[in-house]
Length: 257
Image 1: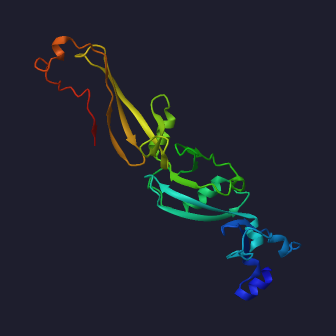
Image 2: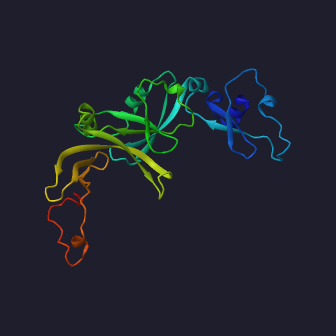
């Protein structure tokens, strides 16, 4: 069959790949190269559909025998700013690991000057709320065919946070629409840096921890002020006329620069 189709298309028959279709017309199964398989065995008769038996063909740039020993992958590159910049296809031996994929990807993208020169490859969890990072030693031949792969540049501040885990924290952030269960987009990592803790002298039992928050993806930094006050309010302070003006001390405020 490959020989006849190659003659009709004037294309190398060893650079053709065939795929069967479902009853709906969607692609079903890619046919493996075989010398003993008949066309009647490939096309199963369907009594529910009146459409003629159809097999899809694909023109390849490499030999089908070489393709069967390699793995075709597509990686969505998000860079360091958590933006889907571009998608890069790769054809690597099935015995290659994820580190080899990172090395090939580094030749196609532009990394930050004086950065870490490290690339993280991950897939998104089923609930869409976190990254499932590959360690780098996984064989790409074992990655499922329908897996959507993403890659990003590891920022320097994240490596610094890993060096002092008792001080800095790395959390996972995801996007959602109205309800937390309706996640969408690509999750990213967020570095939280503690700056200082202070106890209010004015308000007894008031505790206000200050955190400096820096978003490694958007390169924005700011102050996040969280205040919990357990002070009891008496009858005099509950009256609007006797209520004192707010303090100039910015215990309950938020400023983003």
